[in-house]
Length: 139
Length: 139
DNA sequence: CTGTGTGCAAAGCATTTGCAAAATA
DNA sequence: TATTTTGCAAATGCTTTGCACACAG
Image (cartoon, rainbow over all chains, first blue to last red; front, side, top):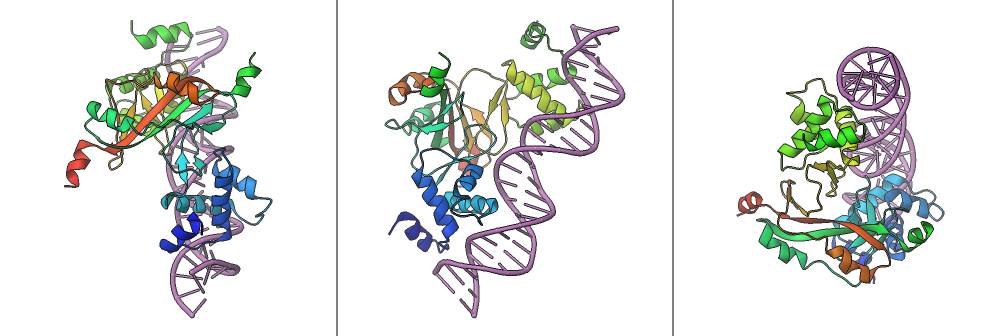
């Protein structure tokens, strides 16, 4: 029994085809789609699902921590099917967002405690640069 | 002659009272106000200035690098009168945003190059936790 | 069968835009 | 005086909401 089934049962949330579709789609991609992009991607297989439903599904998935919300600074949100804390990088040219794998910055929370009087609990680290395709374009 | 005068002259931009007011206000505060908050703060001294003008002033100030735009993940932007790259922290309880001084993460750009094929140029690091006031409230 | 979730359309914010009038250089 | 910028109102883009109907549990 997979993650979403267990968690939705625990929280007494209904396991609808729409919610499953949004969740599965985010699991299936390493892109970090916006709500709109998810809506469009699911349109062919779920032609009757509305954009509002995508937003509502995302909201509940975020609330139960099955999905994570990103804000790279674009004026909209993107979503990530991986919920562990990991850094992201955005291409300043084509705007795509990738995960950075193999390095974690959770340790920074400790480091920062000496420089602030906050209780530091989490962090979000975003890098910006040029992806390999865009690098080559400019040559 | 101050920063904004020199830079606006160089870029042939007009030095209007509204633009100066927005810039000076951001220099004067360590809060990281939204456009709306700047508008309200300047309302008493500039009662005729419109919100659209605040947005336009912020846009040009960001373009000429006199001001920096933040996105802590709230669905709106905040602005910072300091333009050097430095980390920020937001209180998860009262939502205020503070600078973290005395520590820099620009070095992370180098570290990350071994884990991605991007040209890494900049980064934004946001921490989240409880500020000293909110910590005490919960006791 | 009960209550939660969906789909639609309308509403709500944050931000941008078009344009005539005002102000800077 | 020639542009650029302002202020207003309307427009846009992303996200949320209200409500009747549909569906999962």
